[in-house]
Length: 412
Ligand SMILES: [Zn+2]
Image 1 (cartoon, helix red, strand yellow):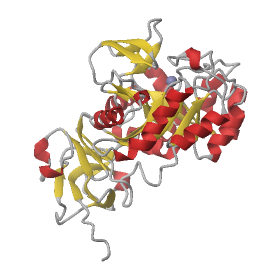
Image 2: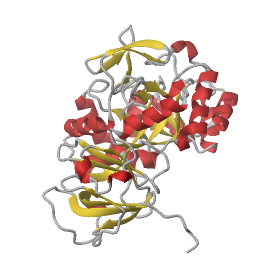
Image 3: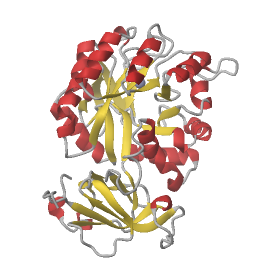
């Protein structure tokens, strides 16, 4: 063989795998929708799923009693562990990647705030410059530009002073600076149609959010190529039976993916249930919308240059407006299951497969299929996080005895 690079290999042994990924006639388990099996990763890809009879891998991760799922993909997250994407430093990105991996995230979009153009540009450029060099946590698969081209009627915690009309020049500079993969905008503002077209041309997923659009304006935006809704229910016109608004369009248009902050604070559990019933798990994208206080104690923090008080699980500006969350993805999954009554076998795609598909990454991420990225998460019976694997490397491990060859553990 020409290839002289020795690939690392990792075998996850005897885990509970979603039955759809297992070969025929797998051994039964006590868990509906799951079968017992192994996942073999070679290099950064999944090579085999099912029974791996002979243990030839360099490292074996004992997954007995644990669910093995595609790693979580968070498409809307500003920060965590004291850092924020707007810090625009390699340290911030590395610390965020490390922190998110401890909560099962294997890939995320670093999400920017409504801010002066130079500040957003710096955040995008930071991901462009350093994003791919970070290998000790979740992978940074690009940038989600949230604002500044949003409605002043629904700023949420986006600083209103920096909300402005869409600028094709600014957008072109952002795209040139780094991997912009997603943009949240208000489709009803002047100039939005041209920006939607420009974004689609660049392969950027366009999302409506922080918007006061009518239902009809949303239908038109969907025809122009908007495919997703940012934090459904929050910062959008609500559902009135004669004015269905953005929420009505998000719930009713089949092609629209719906992001959801499942922290029980931004959205009532019953409203989560309504969303899941309208959209199905195949169109529901769980996000955290976390800010820098995630993982840290209650206290005073900052978001978009504004003071934020964190207490009892909520983050608020001085006027009481919710300002991001301190939610983590494994908690989002548990909350979503509790709100909807869906079992894990049905709910898990909202954390990985659906976000991957919504971003056009369905052929590489979000499934336990040979050839896919070996991005995996291990959860115990109560959905507590046990391990996170990114590109075939164990980046988080709760119980060290489960790993045969600890020299392969990248960080803990
Ligand atoms: Zn927002």
